[in-house]
Image (tube, rainbow, N blue to C red; front, side, top):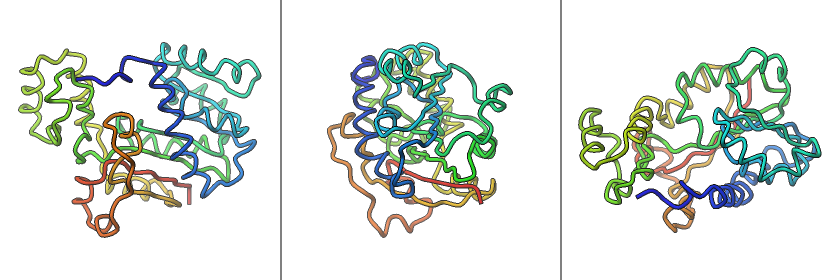
Length: 265
C-alpha cells in the first residue's frame, strides 16, 4: 500500500523540510557550523524540501532534478527564494557538459539525500562531483543500505502485504519480479523496483568507492531507525547500537539509514 506522501506533494515537501531541519542540517553543521553564504547544490532535489532549511540559513542554493514536474513543484514551494535570486532550480542531468562548465568548483556543499541508491555508475558520479566542489567543499550522502529491511523501497507497492514485508528485495531476481507481478503491481512500479536491484548500495561498497575515488570520510552516522520513518511508519528515530556498527556486512541488514560527509583528499 503506497503511503500518502507518495501522492501528496505538499505533505511530501513538509516532511522533507522537517527531516532536513532536524536531522540532515545538524549533521552537516558538525563539519560546517557557519552555513550562511555557502554555495549548496542538491542532486535529486525533488520538491526542494531538503534545501529549505539551508535557504533559511542564508545559503545560496541550486536544486537539480531530472523530472521537470518536480522542479515545477519546487518553484511553487520556494518561489520567494527563486524570485530573490537565492535559489536556482534546474531540470537537467548533471553530466551535461554545459552544467560542468557553468558550475566548475562552485559548491561548498553537495547534497544527495535518498538519491545515490537510484543512480547507476555510482563510482563515476562520486568521482565527477570533485569537479563541482570548491577547495573547501564536501558531499553529503543519506541513503538506506541495500540489505536493510526495506532497502528495495518496496513501501511504494500498492499491495499492503508487500509494502510492509521486509527483505523481499533480496530474493533472487526472477522470484522477486514474479512476486511483484503476482501481487498485481503496475509495470512502472516493477520497473523502478527492479532497477533498484542493480543500483542499491551497501555501506561497504559506498566506503570503497569513496576511498577509490580519492575522498576522506569526515562524518558518518548509522541509524537503526531512519529519521524519515517517523513519517512513513510512525517510528521514532534511533541511532544504531555501537556493536552493530563494527560488524561488516551484517550491519547492512539492521541499519536502515546512513549519513556521510566526504571531502576530496
